[in-house]
Image (cartoon, rainbow, N blue to C red; front, side, top):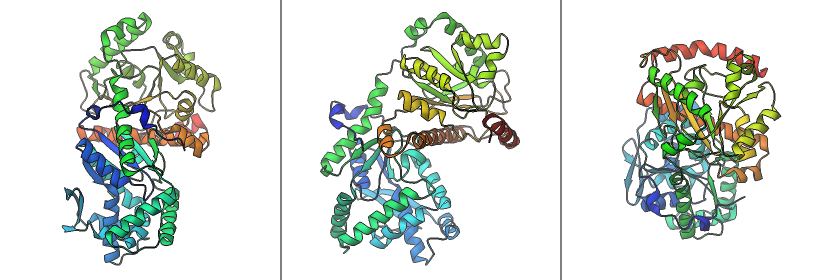
Length: 491
């Protein structure tokens, strides 16, 4: 498994990490996630959130109530009617269940043996994930678990997959149990950790996996100090790369060919007329040779997202039929549109798209493949993963909202927004390709992109709650989307 090389980043200073950073640490049981997460929280002055402790607290409560941990409905009912609270204290997180401190009780071996089963239930995870995301959106936190980077907080500032061999993890857990006064044999620990690895990696809901944009760190032969230092440096890589991005728009605009400046200016006037609001990077600080991946809900999406482009040559992947429309098809070719056949893999389109990315130009794609129902993003098609693997181009996700029901100067039907996410860099791609074939890796990239859209939508709904118009329109559109998807993709 390809490992993060901390020596290449040893020159970085801790002060480049944003104060509202979110650090997500994933990995198997016994890999040292909790210990390192606490160390990073102290080092960067962040709040440590022990997500595993939340599942452990529910497991403890279920065992005390003599609830069968294989019965999802009973666990969901218990979690729904109980109060779970995390507090900072005594140098680590304190866990309270219905007002009682259970911080010590949840670390016992009998909890270790059952927590993976409890966490495997989709209903349980939905409750816990919602709670974790609320905590994470505040920023300034370190979270660790099994799917923090890929599911719980896909927009994390920095992601780490902390790995170690089974033998190394058994030895660490054995020493921990000795310190806590728990007598468990090495043989029993080996069996239990191996079983947990199997359950965590094979469960249907949010299995343990490397997020494609996570730094992979194998700490098997590292001391704890080396492990913590390596993870700290990994946290600084994305902020360091972000600082290198050029945010000066004046020379960027001047360097654009006229054929881009004119349509971009026209689109910008259109966006201003309809009251488009930009959130996030506002299209300014993005790298060249980047995939701009937007969700797709209406025919207004391309020009409105075009209004946010202010630098670099842009190529757009668009369905082949658009290029056959008189005048409009010529315009698409004029601004370097790339026609793509959608019913099967279009080698020519992907080759041209890959070429433009390698040349340092940006590429706009709508990775869902066709328009989706409002409020229901995805699924993301495998074409995004194919492009990423062919080019290693970073991705900037964009979530559009409100491009239905447009009115001058803004509509009360839905807020018109272009939400830019952070640059996604594929640090974990080589490690994934060592373990899985290219098709599976493409699906993992697609799943991450969908999780990003869902999180960006949730943030938009927090800022401006979903309107009645959006809800009703989304329901109406779902049947049409299913029919269009069958027509376009043949299924």
